[in-house]
Length: 514
Image (tube, rainbow, N blue to C red; front, side, top):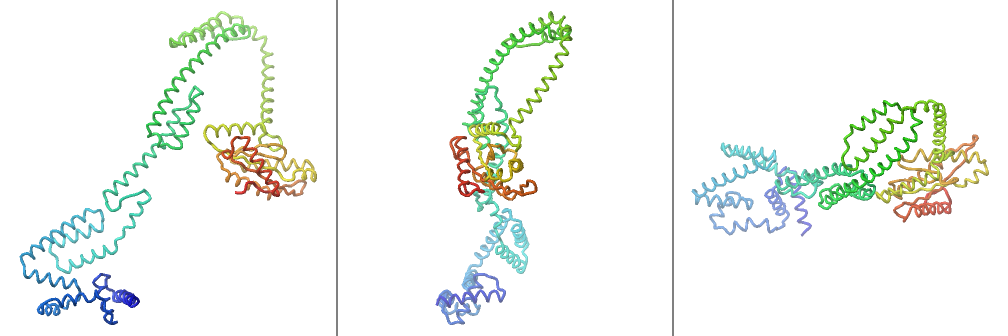
């Protein structure tokens, strides 16, 4: 039976499509019942009309058959018309009220902010006001049916990305969107204000404030909206108050140091009077300028008195200084040239102490200094870093086979490759012999392994040439992340262990495997 019903349903839909009938409940029921009857299937819903008509008296049955009533709705219309003929006054009032109700509904539709529905509503109001013919009203009715059938509210789904929004109530929907957009605007304001607040807080003269400043700066960078928190606002107020007090104390301390320094300057100026070519007129001018200064009456007053004392001493003691300076001018010139030579030599020595002469990467001393800086950034600002040890495989065999000059060429080329492929923020140094260490700030273990694998692949495919002969070179790598270890030293040990593990596993690979 169920199979037969399903077949009737399918045939009903097919007939509606073939005959281009509108998919309405009445059309579907008529088609369904007609097909069911032709197949000899009795369906209870299809028998309701005949059952209802059989319950009428013979006169009404005869009248209903003459009207060719085919649906329940037509039967209801038949009853209504009969009732209206019985109460014609009530019928006219009912029609009038229904007409007014229709106008009010149409007027309400024009306020719903839907362009197509508003146009149809205004057209329908025009028909009702001007009493157009039935054909015109039927046309508007069909357009309303088309509107209802084709209406698609999927465009409202585009609002889902803004958050939970009530789409059943237009006013509530607008208020929800406004609230969400206001939150985003607040976030943008906090994002732009947070860096300004950090800039106003730093730097502080008192170095003891640096740790507190680093903590507040870290919180504001990672959570700008915390500026709205009363706790954060109070913390910033306390910081500023404490900073002012400590800065004042620091200023007094520095003034005291300056005071002592001026005493020492006064003594040294008297001793160096014989070696200056400053003219008497210049000293008088300095004294005049100092007298015009308007220092405050607190700790700066003592500084003014000291400076005045120096100027007075210079005024009385510089008249005979030019002669002595002329005699020593040649000696001073020679000393100046020698100092220049020493400065040049010092710069070269400093550069050599920080840069390995063969590979042009950092020395181990410079590498240790950079490790200290990376550790300080990690401790203070939680900036993580990863260490990568790289060691040339079988380097002794290369030296024994091709000579130490070939080994130097390979080391130099290896250093050049490392300098080329590291980022500007990275740091590479020669840890010893054929072993190199790369510091990768802000890089986690996975990215560090990826970097090491990249270098390993480049070295494996690189053409190392010595005297027109290619030398095959491979490299083993060990990687460790600082946050996975307790100290810098344990991080270095971990990376070294990974390097040793790579060697044991057959060389030319990176450990750990990710």
